[in-house]
Amino acid sequence: MAISSKLHPPSKSLVVTRPRSILKTHKQSPPRHSITFPLSETISDHFPCELVQIIIDYLRDDRAALAICSSVCRAWLSLCRTHFFAKMTIQPGNTAGFLDLATSPHTTIGTYVRHLTIQKQTGHVDHFFILNNASCQRVPDFHFDNVLRHVKTLTSITKLSLFKGYGENPKLISHLQGFLSLEDLELRSWSFPGFSDFVGVVCAPRNLVRLSLTDIAWGTRRSLVPDLRLPARLRHMAVFMEKQGQFFNWMLRCATQPIESLEVGGIFGQDDALACAHFLRILGPTLKHLSLYTPSRISKVNLVYNTGLQTLYISHLQVSQWEGSGPPPQDKISEILAQLCSPNIATISLQLLMHEPEALKTIDWKEIGRTLALPRFASLETVEFRVPKCRKWALSLLEKNLPNVAARGILSVVNG
Image 1 (cartoon, helix red, strand yellow):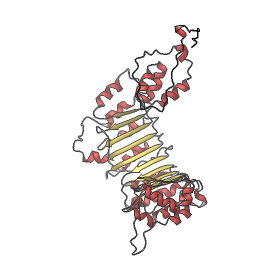
Image 2 (image 1 turned 180 degrees about the vertical axis):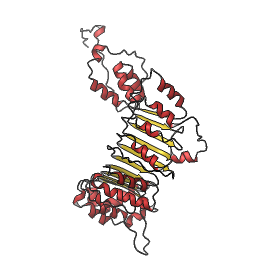
Image 3 (image 1 turned 135 degrees about the vertical axis):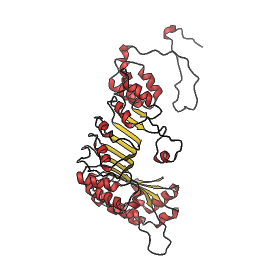
Image 4 (image 1 turned 30 degrees about the vertical axis):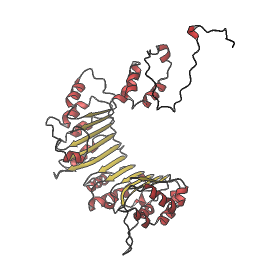
């Protein structure tokens, strides 16, 4: 066998290696103890900043990778910090550390924190956990007023979540007015002396775009409601609380806010149901995204006026099985679809509750199919039914009874 006399010098020797398949990820390669060196500035300076930003944004959930990137150079460190310190939670266990950090002249994270959560409880926040957990003890020296006074050093906050503010001082208003970049305010488990105090807080941030209210209460203290209006940029609201009727009626009296996205749920009285229905009617074509929870308590809602709807989500739709005696139960699904007059509706998601899967057979699916074939549903992209546990059986039933909807590829059945 002939041997080639052409040899390569050691510094330029050819190394032939077999390319590794990215599919064989189950085999772990032996650890390599290689030494890595940083790129020279002449090379790294040729990377466009936009490319570096895209890569670091892609690695935002990989803290180990972000730590490595942050050590490359000062510019990369600044980009990585926007993800390292994007969220901060202040609770009784770390309040002292936060106050030391906020008052330090060397603090440099003030421009990186965008979502701040302040909670009066260590651990996760849940209203029922707060009420029923005996180990949850009040911390006498933890007050929102004291914390918010120092939070102003964080100048880039766009979302503020305040949890469990029972018995707090209404001076909260003056602090919220200082967050000039605040666009998203979330209040959960709060009580106010009176309705006017509550209104003053939600109207304080003037650049607010999104407002979420959960488990909010106010006392019977009587005082004149100030001549306030919700922020002009407010477009998204989530309301899960009692006494919603008083809040909705106040909104209608002060001005018609162009709300585009609305989530409504909670415990409803008759007055609350009427006020909610009237509020939806006044919103009219402005409303684009609507989520209704516990719809059985919102019997007066009529979606005929919401001609701009693009997405509709309804949960807890009770499907009753007809025993054959007396009049058949009212078909809630057909009633809801008959109200939809928006030519822009793209997504309909309905959660169905039933005692037995056989209750699905009592629904007039042929009528539903005829309704969904109307021209106003031409833009429909998804019709989703969320059923408990019997997804495969329900999917087979609906594909059989809604053949045109299934043929369009927009039918979806999921567990839920």
